[in-house]
Image (cartoon, rainbow, N blue to C red; front, side):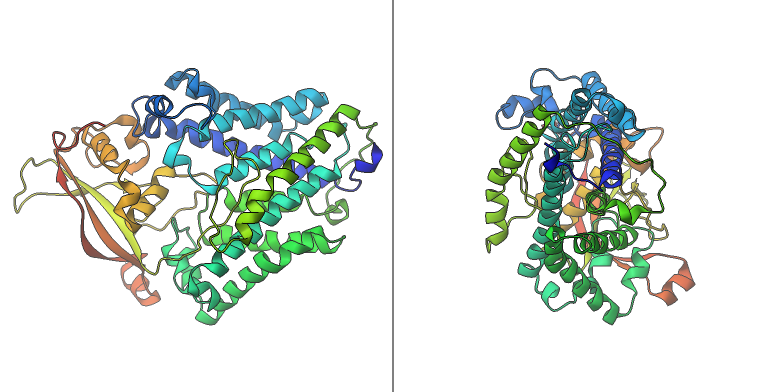
Length: 477
């Protein structure tokens, strides 16, 4: 059925499959390096306890049949290996059925992790990767022509991602409508990057232009994705440039990068004229594959009812999945913007009893602000899950109620896996006797302050987040 073939999108498909493979690789590596402390058998929120409380039908995962840290590591490692093989082009050279099976395995393995990941995997880009991963199953191999229906579904995902984000902002915080949100957002975003302070200090008229440009990109441009070329390509190009701006200004895991990857699928081969790629010659598209593509299209059309209804609702939800398979979701973030940055600073002491001479030593995290003289680092697309949850904790204690006391207990035990998530352990030889947490307001230094002190931040105490506790005070849950 050649009428379903999408001539002229060979390079776009290649970049999408390689790009998604790269993001899968980062996601599996992040899971492998962080799971023991976060959700391992002896982690802060252990998987075994979760699967005992939540049945398979509510959260499908391979780990409902069996869990061990060794098995989790095997799953994450297998996913990383498959992603790497796909990234270097091995998967696309396989027979069509085998190629589809590899992409299906990537989706199943990562779904199994996300569905037992609890708060650590509650971010919108987890569902976004899984939804894009399903579509990738049907992108075909090197011998199969790209299917226009699948590329159209990729555009529909990109539309929902951008338009949903635009709507949640326009309906949310008033500062999005009066164009002032970026007076604050570069400073208060979850995890600033190395250039975020420079973006924050741009003139305020430029911040207003930034917000207006964001509204145009997210509320107007997405409709161009469904127009004929070159309009569709221009729309995707605008989105890609906007996302690169966000990559420079912050750390949003792989949210920006996966949006860029999806946008690349919209650009026709003519756009990539500077890339020397042999002309592809495809054979007839297998009829079972065409049937599968049509079935996928019908399924997406039916499942789109819920995200469309959500986008049209005045009570629009952000980053919601309407089914346990994380397929055909709704997206959107930062409907409200915090005006001040509040950071939880965790400290320990070797003294069992406080005295005027008690020394409190600060735990340093890898990504979130702590030491005011330390410049923020670039980590995206890698996702520092604990650092992100500490940002939520600074907004409200309620966000941390289920895990923060357990995290503190791990620090009181000098738990090796937990300490690997941190940049610095101030108690390398012996566990601390007590831990406390204090709340600070952080702001960027002005240009004059930075020249005088070399500091990137100024911080002021807001009081206690958690009073000092010892191992006997924090009970295992």
